[in-house]
Length: 326
Image 1 (tube, rainbow, N blue to C red):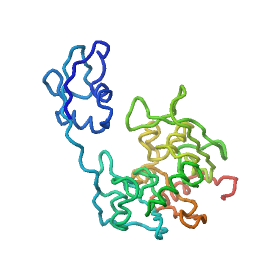
Image 2: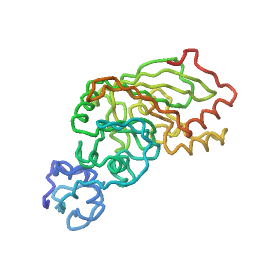
Image 3: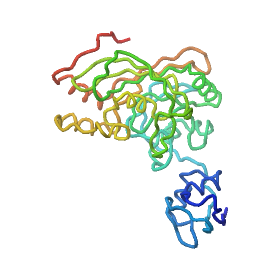
Image 4: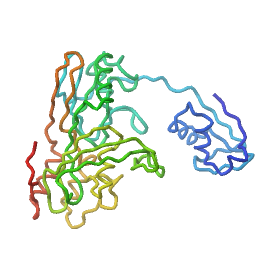
């Protein structure tokens, strides 16, 4: 594909990357950025940067080669299997592992490891996301379910859409949440100021997002919280807790102002060693796609969080919640 066009007067001042996205809607923004960075986009005969502001009458030329084949190679990466049968595979994903290939990470993914573990999963769902029904952020550990058959995939995605899949998370947040429990019902959308961030959306934008939380334990300046999702938006728990003024420990994206802990260097070291954020998908429940029976699974709290919790409990001021765990 080749683009050769002139910037119209009413398009003057537009950023090159946004102008290209409007002219080439079938090409992803990530791929367009790669083309610009590779020098395949020229303005008035010269390679240009994505942020260039276009002038009226400028000539823009772009070479868009055919997209790479949508294939994924299996990789022999060990998986911590929690449940498996002929229909579903449930894995306890470690922090630091990406769920499926994407910008910045093409190998070492859960999808590639699952394809090696169960080769037949390759024909389920998308070719680069075989069997992937939902995802966990790279820095989040815990339970994730994959479908091993197309029928199981259809069933599980339907259950997610109907909000009948139960997902329980453990999170360690900055500060002491004042309420023992609560609900955040606030729409989430892409942050217009950053491509890597989500944000609470205003003006009727974004998608409805609901997180219920319950305090399990309070410490001197942190809180152990149980969160349950009613929706599954990108970064949902991270965005919602940050909106309350209590971002997750280790979350540099949504908690930069509270990331440092100069008075407690040991805690700072433990947070730095999380390989992500203080968030763990501890519980998962769904209806089995073949039998209809309810499957309820739990994953132990990983050592990365246990070490941090042990330190927080040893500090003066640690106090359990007055509400019992359920």
